[in-house]
Image (tube, rainbow, N blue to C red; front, side, top):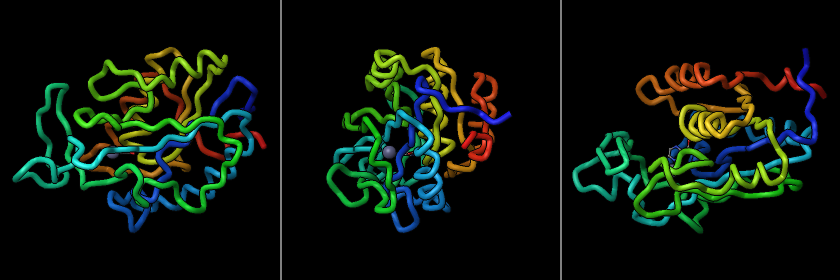
Length: 211
Ligand code: VGL
Ligand code: ZN
């Protein structure tokens, strides 16, 4: 059964930024392949939100902020375990800009996240301290949007964490698998799909959507 997109649906296109594309500072393999797909999928939606990873220089999630650490090490922070990343998506840099081929002019909102120096935010709903809201849940609710479709980068981090939080907030959630790509650090992709399945996130493909 094709999935019909209705006016209470929203597409959240996650982090389609240069930094996560080949050549970017935290490149996701084949990340650029999802850009034309996201452009096409977005045309079926009345409501689209774009997200941007948006870190200050010296952000706590950067390995370079922790002497002796390297990217993909994990450290313990007050809010929990934190994977350390290469410096990426620093505010105002080209790395943080959307991919130049991203063409979703009818997107209504751009949510920026990860801008607190001492807290990361994979999720576009709740920061990694698990307390600080980005406001997106309230925005969607205020607009009467109840079903959240997600695509983008990376499947196993920002897409998955966003999907899980959207479920916690009571939204119906679908992740468009072929319009997402993963980092897959140490089994993170399989773990993310398992967590999403358990939480009731639906795993769909772009050709499941009615055109
Ligand atoms: C992301 C790691 C660090 C993502 C962002 O967009 O999935 N991953 N910052
Ligand atoms: Zn980040």
